[in-house]
Image (cartoon, rainbow, N blue to C red; front, side, top):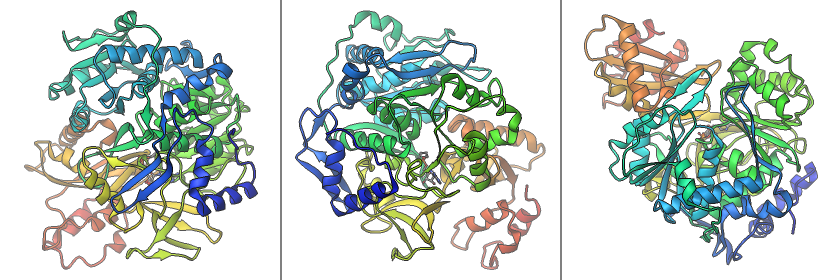
Length: 632
Ligand code: WT7
């Protein structure tokens, strides 16, 4: 059976109804067109209480056989990865499916040569170069579990993730270039590894040629290693429920957790959503601007597009280098048909003005997408008019690291769209809105907590090394549901609009942090006794980070103290988690039992001083006045 793409609203309605009536038959039909070494015994077994979810159990496959080998006879010479370098004058690279297959096999053989075995965890800390895609797929080829760490995270963050996953292997590069900056990647890894004695091997790819230190017996160069291997590497046979990767993400506690996705269901779902949401057609050039270090890059730079045999554009640089027209220049240069980016990028480029857009035609675009945070109406309309030229459907795709693929989105040009609404659930996805007490709200035109009541193939399976944490975080708040942590509204016709997080998670430029995680980082500064962090609305980033800090001693030079705190956060998490505002306070509003009243801090940060509520029961009501008076 070949893949059937949904082409009309009626077909969407029919598919949706079928997916709810008989999910087993529905997903079996979607799974049919892949290469399975052995077909599954059961489509789905599940229990949200444990939680335990198994898709296509007993099925045997290798996802890289489906991303690569399967295409060789029909698409061998087609470009799989189209790489645009940071430097606009540098040569782009077109890597065909045949060449990518070859490179993945060689890299996989290098991994084996260095002792990596099926089931081993491999940490990948690399910039946006083709070798990153090759490394990811090489792990998958031999059944090693990749754990990609975004190359903007600090040494300490890498170390935490390596230790949590007990990874003995690290794949990295000498350096990286982003905009006008040259960043020493290997040196950051070296620092991380000082606290990771379990790492046996580091494989280093050359990108910048900058000098690095190689530790004898531990570190090897990729370009030397490839000389020892050939391009013959049969794919390891994996069970559908074997782990494919771990990806760390922040929650409401201080420590990020390793979200685990497995081979079969993730494959079926990323492929299905890629083709349907974006209405991908053979020979479309698809560009997702995310970094491979996030789930968006995993699912819609690598796996989804390659499973579909598409050409996936990978961009090394930043949207503002050499100027704020770079995205639009790249779209024209490579005749991009489908463009997928984040609201924060849209807003920041919108703020630069149309002079950066107007030189480009953008006529190749057919579909434009948004992901990572709510897109406000103003940005939606600007995107529609100035980038889509009122000629491209916009897909506002709602999903999470834990969901593996898009759960709620219109399908481009097929189902209708509405500004600031993600809109319609993907077939197979059964969203509900709950009251705070966990009761399902059945009517339309309502708001509630967004939960999902039936599994989809790429649902999170566990949090690495701590299944109980997975249960508690996602499956225990409301029995029988996967709880998303988001609040949502459903309009009178059933479209969903995501309002934002209802937990202690903030979403800064589409990046997720726990407030506790940032507080822990701030508290490592010797200037700090205690801190409390909240999000506040930010024109460009969606949410900004507002930190209230009790200093160790009276502050004589606030700028210096702030710089010191920012440096600490950069060291502990990375520059992306730096607070936008730091207010020094003499105390924090606490209840008599010592709990910080975040609601008050949020209101102050949002400048909603009229709605602070009753503060008389606080331990020290005077502190609220001080905080309000000195608000930044
Ligand atoms: C959180 C998940 C999904 C990949 C990127 C982020 C927010 C995501 C949307 C959207 C409104 C969105 C939610 C969600 N979010 N997409 N289209 N509209 N909010 O993945 O880091 O796991 O974050 O991002 O709050 O829970 P993530």
